[in-house]
Image (cartoon, rainbow, N blue to C red):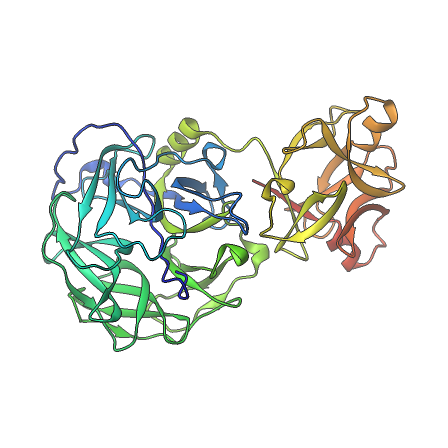
Length: 463
């Protein structure tokens, strides 16, 4: 959440007008299926808002760290009431094994516009969304931001926790519900004596964990409770932050059951990196920051939520929405930077930037050799990465033999990491694509090359 603008995010989906059924109190047999993958629900923004979209976006991941946007990173649903936009969508699994989506009713950056409503959808498997409605949470003239949902077994109801300015201070309120159509009266859920924002709640082993942003100092913290009841939480971690600012904690239990991740959103679209930590024990106080080399969030992602899904659900999402028709080239030794074109030149720049499509490439069979690959610009169709005088540039394909050869590369195991990729020139086969001073070029590289040179020539080809 942007503290300076009091921003908050939540997500929503557009869908058909089927009425939602009631929520079963007992999980059905299908609920026992093992989660083997993850889904991330989010909205998008970029520095000059060229990539801003306030509908529901979905991405999937097998390992929980490297993400593939679905539907070409276009929304899979959009709100049809309220502000007609959402921020910070929260996707959750109901007790009957189906899904729900709930999101802040706020489009764009008009953070002074207060709404007492949340967007709500139902979904069988996230391949379609039904029962769209607005759910009124309170009657206060203040915001209703960044909802999170958890199952309160003692009550036999769901708790909907969200950020609200109550009595002049930012706190978390809670409403309880059985059907996401009617809710109990709001009550204060967490008010530690300083302003808080962006709560995420996970119940594990009889303990309810609440991670949040402390607005007084800008750090993320974890609190826990043995009951999950309002005003029963005790903060147990130190403050966490990476980058210049952090918000929107996303607490994720690994499907293997061997540890946890914590994701944090940066402060604004101008600096919309995501950062991540890991721990082997959620009950401990030690979180280790992950190297950005180890994870790749969805393109242009802002806030949202992450949930474990089954293999069948993963396959269904990919089949229904499709995976990107483009790739990005992420640097091994500068993992916040991606290959992009600008002014006809090819270089490595820190993401985010606009036009964000400068970093998107259609990887096609090599123009000179189908066993190789060529990279066509998404936003300058017909133009390809090619070397000229050993320097990489973006030029229109003139269909000459020289151009086709200059624009063809052979993908090999990464010179610095075999799990990544290096790109060997087709017509200068001793040379590899690499960056030098952030410029892209081809240089001779081999077994005698320095570790730094091999890193410069190693990339992750990622959506």
